[in-house]
Image (cartoon, rainbow, N blue to C red; front, side, top):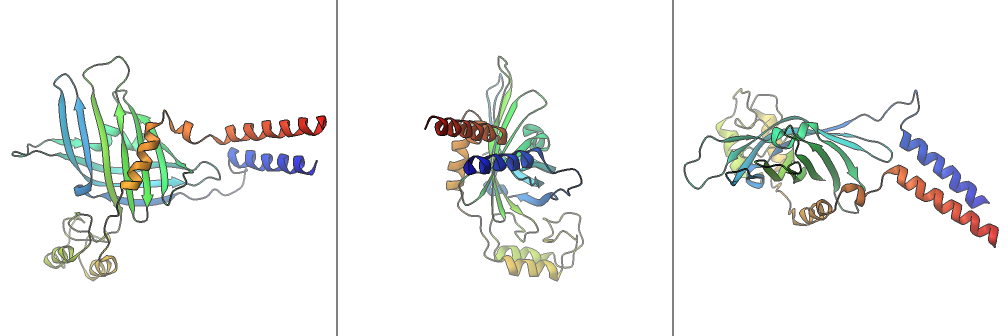
Length: 278
């Protein structure tokens, strides 16, 4: 009887948490981080169409990542996305630029954190683009770094649609990787030295680590503190995200809180029946 009562209390607490904060209870504030893509480690593929397009783009730009904590199902989203892709070509590079936010509708995706048993946080995003293509995107946050992997799928029974895929690495800002190669070293110091005491609206071009639009001693201090910081090996992260993407849906990997509640109720009922027949 005591076990049954404890189980009922636990289910009540779980249901209350899943329903959200009570009236008058202050909500947990959003957690915001700003990131900048590392072009050397970030690409977007573009395939399909009647012409059989097969292009690759080098990704540049920045975005904000907003996490809204919740007891059982933290939500996540992208904001302030200013990212584009430059066409990679063996010949003279044509002036072809891809709007990454438009290709994946990053700003419109809905995401949630997955309780994955891994040394990094994993987030699943889903949505649709303006042309009706579905989007599935995974993100892994590992220290100051974020790894993105995913793609689009055209609507059923359609033709002449482009399909996009992304594998990208971004570093949290402020950062002293002034040449955006994923490594903070003496090459970045050389860029800071050549632009010292400059005023700019382009923080990356003029070695402005803290984004105050002035290249000064504060940016040099950031370089000193981050010297030697290098992008980690994302092979294990990529394998984890690939496995999740290979499943039919994230719902198959992670049950909703309501599903867990129903499962526990069924368990409680079965336990009660066993005691009665004993």
